[in-house]
Image 1 (cartoon, each protein chain N blue to C red):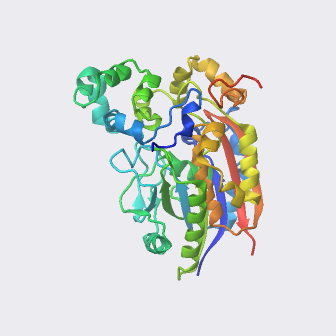
Image 2: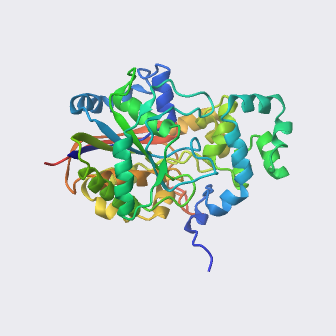
Image 3: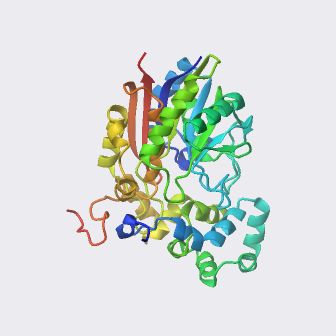
Amino acid sequence: MAKITAGVATSHVPAIGAAIDLGKTQEPYWAPLFEGYEFAKQWIAEEKPDVILLVYNDHASAFSMDFVPTFAIGCAEKFEPADEGWGPRPVPTVEGHPRLASHLAQSVIQQDFDLTIVNKMDVDHGLTVPLSLMFGQPDAWPCKVIPIAVNVVLFPPPSGRRCYELGKALRKAVDSFDEDLNVQIWGTGGMSHQLQGPRAGLINQEFDKEFLEKIVNNPEELSRKPHIDYVREAGSEGIELVMWLIMRGALNPEVIEKKRFYHVPASNTAVGHLVLENKE
Amino acid sequence: MSLDKPYTNIPGTTIFDADMARIGYHLNQFCMSLMKAENRERFKADERAYLNEWPMTEEQKLAVLDRDYNRMMDQGGNIYFLAKIFSSDGLSFQHAAATMTGMSQEEYAQMMLNGGRSPQGNRYLGEEKGK
């Protein structure tokens, strides 16, 4: 049977992708950030997941204002890196897992989460930067990836509670898949940041550190945090953090924290990162 | 009964909600068109002529020509869509963010290195700084 064994959380700042692509990871500005991911890179080389459910948001790449799905699942065989205005990132094509993805879609819709099914889309930095942080620069990604895209661009995104419950539904869906697969779930985006307006550059370290603590040890309470708290305290783009709750909802109530990392800044953003394993 | 919008009293922040998305629809779709290299070239060759192909308001077009991102957002632009404009210009997110704050890019980058803009005094309109 398929099984979710672990969760990873990470920010997905585009400048991190550019630093990797341009060979700048050892520069003084970037070195402390990449140092924070060394543990996870070694860990995942040993864990060897078969499939990653990668929760992220599209940044006006695949979804223009033509269609804005609240939750979407990528069921395609492959997903190409998007051209976000400066050409696609030089990273491998992302290979999907259509059979598991279709199973998840059917199971989760039957649990009252009306996912949009996407059979054709490009994936932007929201999905590819986490892969680069965890796997470096391979010729091909070492596992399959099922993109789960969440709208956090057009307000309102789904609530934290709804995200957390979706995570639980995904967990049930994976548990009922009849192939032996080592599945991880990743939640990406955040932490505090605001990219727009005279308040741009907002960083709230106190908020972020409390969030990192609660998502590990008290996710039930955290899942009830209202949107306005994210926007006011963590910046208009800090609301991406609701996506981490999908990851957390798919894990056991109690988890083993293997890594916690926090760094300011990456360009405009506070970077947070967690590696969590399900207790047996 | 109108919608509850508790975020309208956050200083220096425009939340891209359904009302803003309606106002900014054509502006944002124009931005999306810049994801294609051939459109970027046509835009750069004659910005005004390219903008005139879109049913945008004159105010929106002028804000684009002026690269005034705060004005574009006032008129329904969303930052991830507007990013296509400054990416086409070969400029970074940090550059664009700095222009919205009235700081130079150097000042802004230094603020980020120092830990970013504090939430103190920036949560509510009229909130005292440094409390």
